[in-house]
Length: 421
Image (tube, rainbow, N blue to C red):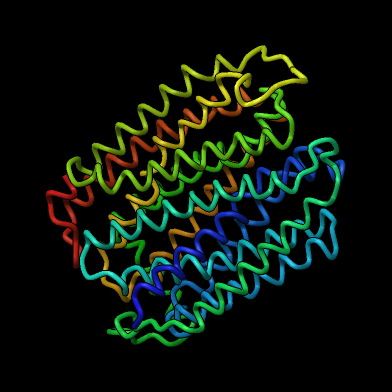
């Protein structure tokens, strides 16, 4: 097994999906300009993506080891590459919705395969946490690259110009190159098949559902649901917020949204260092409280901004720089709770557990984007972002119970007590 080549492949897969999954906010903004649709219709893109993720994860997650993680990743990239190629060939809002449905379905397979492969590529819980945070950090680097990549194809003078669809040719090429890298790599998947007796869909589904017997699992899933709800509320609608509330041009709105991706990447990579000295529960609580304070203190600065034809990076409103700092604080939540939950389970159960993670993450993303869109359309973006205080309060509650269950339940391979304290 070529570990380095596989780790590089996992990172590239996650970065490609990061670009496309988190292009929803950019594509919503461009679809409104290009196709003349309203915000409510444009927000359906998030549902196409997330519901496809949830549905596919539920179907394939627990028996994906039978297909093979490496082959599943190659298949997901092939679907993604073909979907990307259809965008410049048949540009329409229908094609755009089909693209995000394919993005969602292929990401469901890829994420289960990637997360399960992390367990095969690492020997202990410390290494698992480190690689998980690195992969998730590189995911946010992909988001950062994606914002600048898409903005480079947007016509600054005529945002409705369909030339921005050409970005998908480049992305299709990246999918093809990553498939070639995987084709030349090897992954020892024998540990994923150990102690595995189910070979039918019904048995695989039952294995996934049996996880709900563990209180730790459903408390964790509630935490994952809420953390993604918060992330998608900001990530999806920040370009539109920058454009309509902060009065920035379309291309600049997308570029400023990349600051959120950059701070999130720094937060996730930095979390691996901080966790050597601070317990995961204490770190996440501090992050959530600080994030809520930042929302309360910064959003008032976004009120009453007037449009300026000569606006630039040095003259943009202060809120355009300060709001993305939320990413630094929300960054550790999702990968840390994932690592704590997965490393508490034996490796043959990682695929089933990752399937549940993906399902609930997708549902959280869909609900977060839908609520934000409704509030955005009825009131404004400031009220929409204030609503994020509700899930922030709720996640403090779920983290308390998640911590209590990690202390109370001694699952096979559970984290040492000092890591769960």
